[in-house]
Figure 1: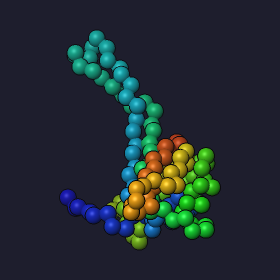
Figure 2 (figure 1 turned 90 degrees about the horizontal axis):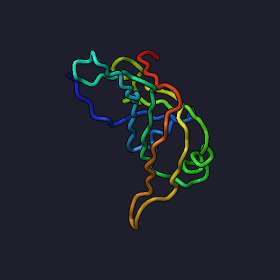
Figure 3 (figure 1 turned 180 degrees about the vertical axis):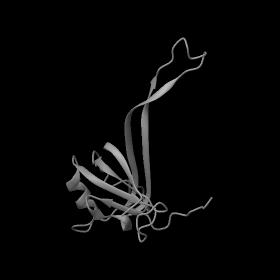
Figure 4 (figure 1 turned 90 degrees about the vertical axis):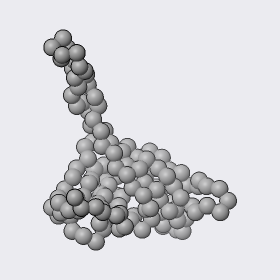
Length: 138
């Protein structure tokens, strides 16, 4: 089994490459658990998958310059935007470098968070709207 260190992830938000502003990205894709247990279940709980939901957690290094990250994300609040994430930015989409994509809701923004001497970082989690896709071909 190959192991990989994430050094150059690709993170695109609303068709803009934001990789250089991101220090952490985490995709979460889940399905509701719907119980189907009955008297024929042999005394064990049985479940099936219900509705899909997902989210993306991102840690940004904030930038307050005109037209930079903070102003762009502020303008996207309350919007559904496209998201694309893959492990390697400079490698073509393939089975070894899958691209995950979907729509996410920019339902929050934390322009300033930190203590004296901290790097200006923004930790956010955005909900996905609709299914998350996984592509292995460009």
